Length: 566
Ligand code: WT7
Image (cartoon, rainbow, N blue to C red; front, side):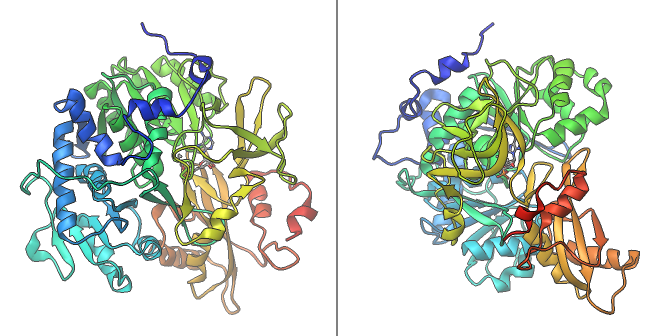
């Protein structure tokens, strides 16, 4: 059996141009993610290899070769061009995990437009905020989600085209057009727009502590890092059957649910269905999945269902397991060794990094509970929170920081230059997380350094929840904080003070919940509302969520004087 290279093998004389060479990219020439992921793979002689084996919750199946993906993305690309969509315009993908999502993503990039994937479970308000901010020109969606788009379209003057991939044309209204990818005449040849390294590619919205979600702008050169990290960290081999659980509404689902596997010419499987242990194991067994990229919340759900379900299935095809999104508990690593005969490898990164930056490599001894070591070409450290100088002491806590300049680094936040600048200190990019580094150079995650709530691997910004709460007539002030949860790690809890004339009651809690449910995505919904007389504030009146968070986690508050300062 092949044994994977060691960490030292990977890091020795590392240069990102390994990836440039392997992808056939010459600096200065055009580079296009979609072309790299489809046309190039066909040119390598893999046209008839399966790119996508797809199944939905009802058991419907579809299969697409790399040539199908190439031709169908051409077909959508040409349709988008015919609508007059220009390079650089934002085109939103508001779709379940249907084939049109994966192939449409490539089509948008082929015409030089910017792909803006949004989770299809978002409610109309969540959608509105992100489409308005990005000035999105077109949206691809499904019949079942159209009612949400219809609710907000009049507030989106820039949204010229609403493209419905499964609709009967007679049921459509003005600005709406139906386009069925598989029924349309197949476009064999399409000239991909000659994007270059710094041309914008993907715009992912991510939550921070303050303000509305920020649009993280990525560029075509990001593929250099996504290709190589997918190959090395996920250990992709030519015959692999790869499964990434993530929805492309989030960066894991694009970087490693589209670009990583397809730039490597790998066959990937997609299951468009929610969590179900039995179903997941059946899926792995049926497709003989070899590499699985999952998340701690999913692993905890599997653990909860018990090992017996797993033992009923032949899961021996699995060769490599990896996880991302939240801290991976040591218990989950040990459990997977027991049940699958191999550990989950924790990987750390974020929307802004575009690729895995700290990780447990396949050939590296795992310390359960540690995120591992920096990917070659990534300089990572932890900084003192006051001086922003590297801590340089084994085991000491600090802010996770990266030296700017890796290929898939976010190039900016859409319309938010100040927010972007605030992420850099002393020549370092700050991730917004805290960790320590041990004497062997392994990173140990400690927690976020801001008020962002991580629920099941999805970041929720307190601002979005609080804005929704403040829209309720009874609410005077509010603070959204994390509360511990055995499965999702954290869930949202809201503290609320009421306006005069309103009394706390179960009915009022229900009324508030019902009102904000219309505006928030299901993920951002508070699990609990606690009515209080007042909220902790700084001297200048800013709400200090950290005090409430510490209360939820039963953690000591530490030095309150620094918390109370502005
Ligand atoms: C934040 C980024 C990129 C993947 C999905 C989320 C947390 C991510 C880990 C990990 C502990 C992790 C951090 C990070 N996070 N991976 N392995 N261990 N925490 O992308 O939505 O931008 O979230 O998720 O807090 O900053 P994202």
